Structures are given as C-alpha cells and as structure tokens.
Length: 134
Length: 332
Image (cartoon, rainbow over all chains, first blue to last red; front, side):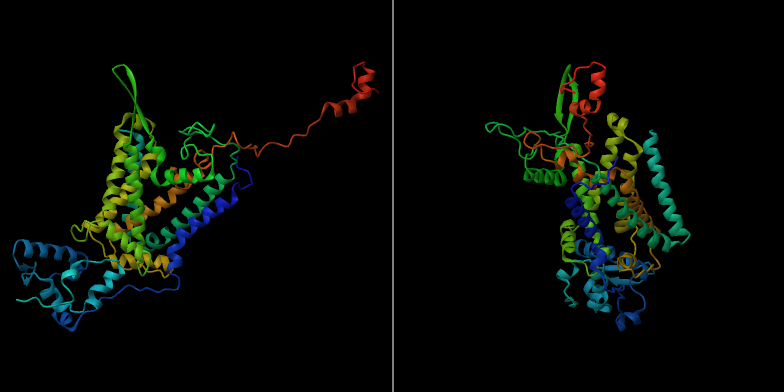
C-alpha cells in the first residue's frame, strides 16, 4: 500500500515538471499568437484562366504528385505534352505552364508550404519563375 | 486463432468504425476534433502524473542488486562500473544506457536444446525491433509538432530534412513512418508466431501494438495515398494548441480516424503497460546504486516498537514475583 510520504521528492517533482513542460510546450510556444490558415492568392491571370490543369480539389491534394509525374515523363521520356481529363493539352513544364499563371511564388506557393513546413526542392533549379529558353 | 489478439483487433476495428461513422458520416467533427483530443490530453497528463506519484509513495527500503556485473568489492577485483554501479555517476550512466539504448534488452538470451545440450544464445532481434520502433515513433511524434507550432521551429525542419533525406517521390517519403509500421508489425508477428511469446501474451500486449499499427497505417495513407488537405488539418490542430478552436470543412474521415486512435492511445496510456515510459525512471533495480555493503539502509516503514525491557517488567511486577517466590534480580 502506498504511504503518504513522497520518497525522493526533489527528483520526482523535477521529473514531473520536465514531463509537463514537454507536453505543454506547444501551448506555451503559441501563446498569444494568432496564426490563421493561409489563403493562397491568385494572380489576375490565374483568375482569368479560371481552370488549372486539373480541378482545384485535385490540385490542392495531388499537385506534388502531378509535378513528379511531369518531371519524370518530360525529363526521362522526353514527352512534354500533358492531356488533362477534360481534353485540354498542356506543356509539362513547371516554369512555363504552372508559373506562367501562378507567377507569385511568395503569395501562392510559399504561404501553404511554409504553414505546413514543407520545403520542396522544385526551387533548387526552377528559381522564381524564369522562362525557360524555348 | 487466439482470443487475445482477436479481441484487440476487433477493439481497434470498432474504434476505427466509431470515428469513421461519428466524424466522417454523422458529422460530429467538433466532438471528435476538439472535445475528444482535449479530454485525452487531460486524462493522459492526470493519469500519468498520478501513476508516477503513486510509485513515488511506495517505499523502496533496500537496494535491489539484480545486476549483471561484478559488484564493487576488493580493490584488485575489477568491477562493472555501469552494470553494477556503486556511485550515483554510475547510476546515471546506467540509466542513460537503459533509456536511450535499452541496455537490458541487449542482454536478452534464448535457450535451446541442441544435440541433447542446453545452449544459451544472445537474442538481439527484440532489442533491434524495439529500438527501431521507439526511435521511429519518437521521430514521428516530434515531426508532428509541425501541426501544433506556428512558425515551425528550426529543429523540426532539420529533423524533416534528415528523415526525408532519400528525396524519393513527392511528397517525399519520411523513413520514420515506414520503419514505425514495419517494426510494430514485426513485434506483433513475434507475439503471434513464436509459440512461447504467444503463450504469455495477453490482450493488453496486443491492443497497444495493433492500435499503433492502425495509427501508423492511417498516417501513411493520409500522406501518401488518400491525401488530405494538410492546411485544413493544421488549422484544426493549431486551433487546439492556441485555443482558437476551428473545425474547417473538408477534412477527410481518415484524419478523424487517425486523430481518434491517437486520443485512444493517450487515454489508454496511463492505465496500461505503456506506462513503462514513466516507469523506467522509477525502476528500483535500475536507478539505485548497489552500495548495500558500504552504506546502511534503514527500512522507512519500520514500525516504532514500544520496547518493554525486563528491568521495566521486573519493576512493575516485583512485589507479585516475590510473593510467588520467583527469583528477582533486584531485591525487594
């Protein structure tokens, strides 16, 4: 049966304090900070175009997969035309197709990427929307 | 077939269905996204602290030298500094080895009879799976802080870089998630397919394993297969951490299953064997120096006995003793 005395009081309390500090770290770190979910901003050109290569819900969740497939098919197989399910053909190019409308990387790409702590290496080569030499 | 793992499997499946039906189909997203997580956190913290306090109130009167090394004795006999420590520094080293590298599991042996001879062999598989499981789980938990902190601090970004250094696929694979799933599956397979392990395994052994497998599987599904809206998910989780509650639309049922299973794990934690997280620090066989020969340890619950000495006894009954003719030490 447990007694009323707390043995090794100092060490036990210290351990519990560390445990609580680790668990409440997110609450303390965020204290007083409002961090609303980011809204990606569309450029006038993107707004005017109305449709992307696929619908918004698909692009929201799968754009990275799409870009990965685009990279592999264009770089490794040399095919550069993507036909979307609605029949429109697009050039498979991050710089020429995607960044043509979404030329505002900071307001469009980075907002969500930073929020979700995602650091894609697309920009290692495709630095801020330079047009590729045709 | 074994009732213990079937029971655990069914329990986890019921929990999954509960979250899927409740949050996914019936739309009780606030209940599953806000109420249950807070409840789980409160039960986890309260239960954890009370278990630790309960242990701290249990007296450990003597050192328990269940050690695997030579005790410190005569100066010309070399002794094991970390496996049988006689000083606090040695104990700290032993605890570090135990907590970070699972020293005790590394000592695991197995017995078999070969050619009518009893053979003991070192058995490292459990140690390896356990180490892989615990470290990948730790990595996964720390990585998940990105959903609870804004802006994401540097150490999480570093950890993500390290974890995803293979740069395979998009979204880039994180090794820890796959190692976590593989290690828990191996630990489960060990309990199911090894007859000896199967014989001693209970539902309380299978349930946490199957629960963690389900958590890892739903997590991997959300990241690589049936992708969810990460921004919306972070809006919810960050809302929990900032007390600015938000339950955005359009988070899939899979997310709520994942979240609910994690909450169940947190609620279950303080009442289960998983409490070895706190218990390892409270283990008397690990955290006490074996110095019984050098230091006298007094049992703290020794009852204060009222001693009635013979002299006092004789003083009390001397006259009656003399009357009865009994011999007395002091004359009447």
